[in-house]
Length: 470
Image (cartoon, rainbow, N blue to C red):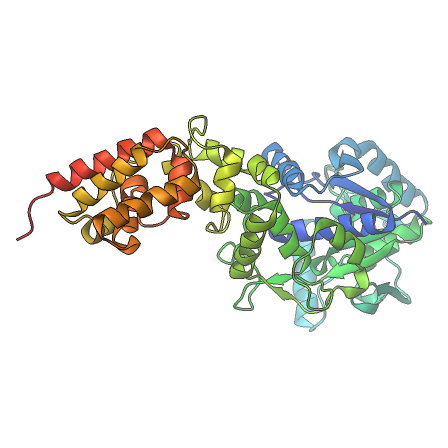
């Protein structure tokens, strides 16, 4: 059997964490089995669907590198096919027109609730022969009333639902547009989907969709309903927990590798393993290993993973990802150290790509002011002479590399009769504006000879301009 999975988002918003995990699991299963991964845009809700949301979904999938093998297919391009299937269901007696008004349906609901019955459509228009004038009917699927729907969910096990619990759902609105439960069935049949992997918020739809498929003479695919993602407080994931657009994680400086690694562990595990390459995910993934219990979203865990990938990804990969952030923070790196050298210097120090750019600005442009706390602690009146001595040693260097720079700083310390602890910190503030940077010799090498010497002299002048204490 050629496995065929699909990701079928509704373009009524961005691609969020839950949707991205569903896409990832579907993609992994297709890749694991040598199957086909299909992207389908379920855009029949014309009032809420937007092109902006479609673009956000496609952009999110591209950033995560979850490439599809077929599609994207748009449901709005398939209305003729849905109309054909609806007519087929009408012709075979599996569907019928319903002329009930909203008031009539509400009265039906109130009566049932008063009798302590489950509110459901009672099928009163089934077999109706009169056609009221001026009422555009909906079309309902004629659900079987006997027996039950049984299916073996690949995550939750055997599920049985009595047909008496299912009413005759609407498959076409009064304006003729098809509804979700009809379109998803037709698409899954036409696209020969073998495995439907989706959130367990869809599980109530599954028995209905199975009945429609069987009415059309088709066997349903296998289903795997994945438990929802919760916040750390046990509540359903929302924006306050981090349920934001996938692209916001890019904007905040996360790597796609970290986000995918985090998502695959939200509800799936391979022992205690935490770090997975893309190849390992594909090799190890199985639907049977998906947990039945909901997973809790942890921003701290995601940040930890991101730090891991900043430390371990190939420099070329980080260079590519940094380009967007350099532009977003308006940092021109054409004048300064090579981007690869900056990354190697900062990758152990940054938690996100946004932070990496922010803490590296002094490599490429002069800073406007010194950190005030650093000035108070490190810039004493005698520091001017200390920095002047360091400047003299550095200015004499022919080879502006880390090792000679290190030797020059130590030579200045010896001449001054000071330990490095008295010379290094004010020198770092003079060159970077703050007390935080990579090792001093690497920092000075990357900032560059001309900038370093000019900044030391600037600091000397700044210190001498400070008012005397007391």
